[in-house]
Amino acid sequence: MKQLSILFAAFAVVLLASCGKYEDGPGFSLRSKKARLTGTWVVESAIQGSTDITGDITNGGSVELTFDKDGLFTYAYDYVIFGVPASGSVTGTWDFSDDKTSIVVTNGSGNSDSSKILRLTSSELWLEESDGSGGTYEVHYASK
Image 1 (tube, rainbow, N blue to C red):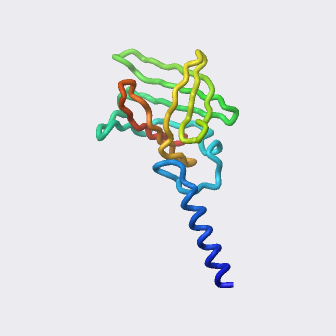
Image 2: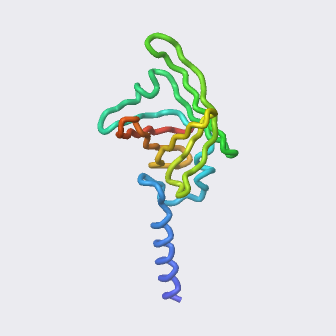
């Protein structure tokens, strides 16, 4: 009986250690990746290297991402650029990459973009984005 308990404990440790797919976790979740991603997310912070670039992303306003369970997404923004109010949204489809380490979004014009998932919990979404010049930055979202 004691050997069975030790075997079960060893199996549980291996199972839990192998469940983490994202660099910053979580290590284990009972909710599927799709269920954790579905919902509305607001920008909490953005970092490039050691520099806080949150203001460059939000422009002093708000940016929201919404992913629905049917594979549709909305990127909505409401901020001021050079003193001119700007608001609007972009819609399209989303899916996970084949290995589920990235989110691939395709807008209505057919342009696709991929973001690496660093953390995905029911309340946090951390994405690594390309800055267009070979570098990357992180955007941390909180569930709304």
